[in-house]
Image (cartoon, rainbow, N blue to C red; front, side):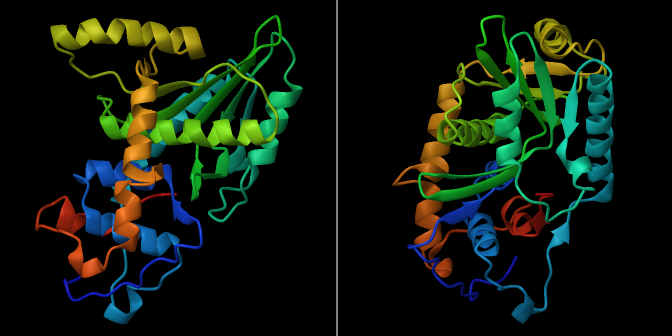
Length: 285
């Protein structure tokens, strides 16, 4: 963590602030460390604040990245055997700086016929919501039209974990807001978007966990045809997480807006694995 003497320029209030849903998820997981968020906001705004101090971001452990990639690959391969799919990261040769796929996603929704469905892997979305420029890669987006032509949308994040946490649900809430804005701007009508998390089953579940597992295994099979590969938690109270997105980032009095305009030295910090280590964690998006 940089010392308290570090000075970061105030972010330009006349330009949209930039964040990714992954940034917000990390902020929550790191116990809402405000200095981590301030560093991330500065990085997204293009401010070069590390080089003068001779430091660079510490990347996520390769072991953790490999575990997540293996789980995602297993799910993607299982789904590709069952449904029509489009994999945008592969389509663009896994390029880190590939363009957003807003128009392509809207095109898939618009041309989908009654009774058809498509699974979109890793579409990169970018949308301006309440003065924030949000950008991120959605793990899985299911578009489906029923017999009368009504469009149903299911957003799912893939997590190589045996437990769904608050930050996972909050992350998909941001993706939901982005898809809603993109579809609204494109005049695409749809039912309320369903939010979910696909995750690993615990290796040795307790009796209490087993009670939770069964309906989530049924949900994974019913929504995606997955039998053993993953569990699906459908977020039961999506509006609560949309409200949390407003409180943390999007609202006029949000934590992120306050942090963006505060002098860096005024932001609280403490030395712990979360706050002192949090500023050095770099997400994959």
